[in-house]
Image 1: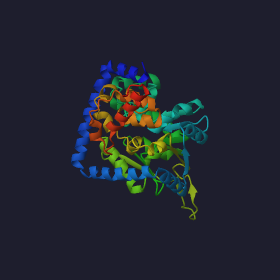
Image 2: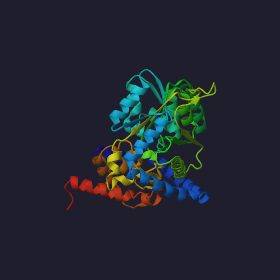
Image 3: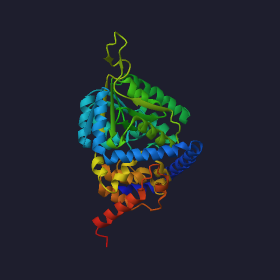
Image 4: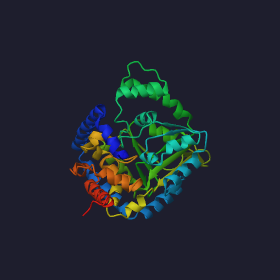
Length: 398
């Protein structure tokens, strides 16, 4: 039995997992409906973001070059990594060894197995998003693109925090867990040598990096360390700074978290010219900002008639929560990093066509994912194409 089928079978035996997923799906549906009712302009913004992303995918190499030029212009140091190995080598060269590193949640970092790589080099690395920290503590992997610990109950979260971090808890309530983790991470955040984040959007015209969040950890990770490293896919490039801002608003809305508590914009390292107008970099924020744009199959996918559609994804995770298969299995149904309807395409792009094709055979073809995708990506069509690849590989097609 394959890894995908074995994990899905185990998930079907896990009643607590299914109850957690059911609650998350109900909450998301209710929250998104409320957001769209109160803010109908979001659907208009979604159409604008969709068109902007189409224009980038059609000329991806042009926009990569333009983004890198803009990043240099604002004092950041851009890199283009074609493979995960190359990306890990670049980041490791920036970070070094024996450092304290804090990270914010990043699916691209998961693609790269970046935390594990930096730890193997002798660095102390801590996730600062609460959900991602719980995933780190259980040695697991994210079960949803926005809510990585959606599968972990409050009882299990309390056990992980207590046993793995040595934090004393009395009630084990969510409020107590949050406060205990806040105190634990604050010391790491203050003394970190390097902060690593992803990016929700990168503006090609200005080199501005957009990050959307609610916890407040990202602005500390990106703003307090001497070095800020951004690791993101080339699919996150948007033509203009306005397009980038619209993209993060749409993502937050379809995650049911609108308006987002924080939108962080970074355009180069911190600096001051308050003394004789002489510019000095590294005032209160990072002295260095490095932006690693990761390809990992995305440029090849941009030329593909079916998989190119996946690159419009803004990773709101709405399709996952709507999918009846994902509601039973979470990201166990999918590749090593990405699961659910959006995970089929992303797994084919970034990991393995064979793994994605086999996982696609579990798709019911109900098309509910198509109906809720804010980018109108035909996810069921991608799944159907992957199914055909599987049947051909297995010699089952007529």
